Amino acid sequence: MPTNTWNRHHILSLADFTTTEYDTVLQTAASFQEVLSRRTKKVPTLQGQVVANLFFEPSTRTRSSFELAAKRLSADTLNFAAASSSMTKGETILDTAKTYLAMGTDIMVVRHREAGVPNAIAAEMDRLGVRVSVLNAGDGQHEHPSQALLDLFTICTLIDPASPRLELLKGKKIAIVGDILHSRVARSNIWSLIASGAQVHLAAPPTLLPKLFAEYISEQIGGKEQEAAGDKLILSSPSSPTPHSPLPTPQLFLHWQLEPALQNADFVMTLRLQKERMTAHLLPSLREYHHLFGITSTKLQLCKPNVKVLHPGPVNRGVEISSELMDDPEFSLIQSQVTSGVAVRMALLYLLGSGKA
Ligand code: NCD
Image (cartoon, rainbow, N blue to C red; front, side, top):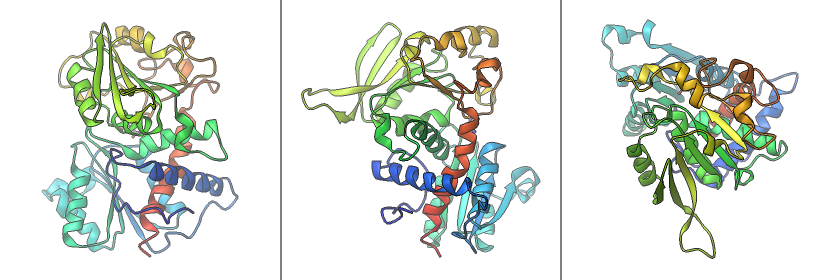
């Protein structure tokens, strides 16, 4: 397993991930995918280590796949659910984390509805001088690194199953459609896809992709607005300058209509309408939203013929994606994403945990 290049102690964001780190995660996950295809699916790698899943917010896929990933690596797992914990008696988040530390936890997998909670726990562990790693499993509207890494792995293994690597996405057109404003998945995916050299097209109604968000993202990627015309705003990232042009290649495009984002797309990532995070009425109706932005087989005809559709789940069937398309194995990668989730999370736990033995 390629660990000699791995120096990161916590995984909180993809904003500063390097190409080497992406490729290390992809190659390590490919090795674990192979392990998971064997009759005996367990390896002793993290034997004796404790992985605590601290989920302060509901989850099906992320929590279960982190638990299975830890078990496949032979770690001991602790599962925390806020509703049945001492937090109902007033215990603070940091005191809860320190309780798990006192039980010998080596890796904390943290999900919280507020942005920054995994960072705060990581900072506290560092302040205490303990070798506990923190993995962000989704914090508010900030980031969801393991989801973006499993999306990346799903796409890269489809292109080259034997050798998934970041450069495979260079020049591919990827549309991210839906509730981008509230999506931590979109934010993490933007980082990894920009790093790969892909062309990322965001599409949503203006209430779910406001211009302010565009400016924020532009600032974050250190890019520059090149054109603001009609429904399209093009941002460029300085990470991929072309040899003959002083201006960096535009990589991030924003649309307030669906069609230009789908035109010739290689992959379409749809996102759930996150009603629990909407503080105002941002849409006239779900029917109208489906009509304008819902992904259907008919709308996919605008894309490349072998286009594939992703969704992080949970899905509002018939809203962001048609029920029939969601279940169509020719186009839908939704089940593969869930399967990839175990191998990718094994890779992340392994990379963080292998130095601790
Ligand atoms: C996502 C999340 O929780 O951010 N789901 C997931 O982790 N699989 C997306 C969502 O909730 O819509």
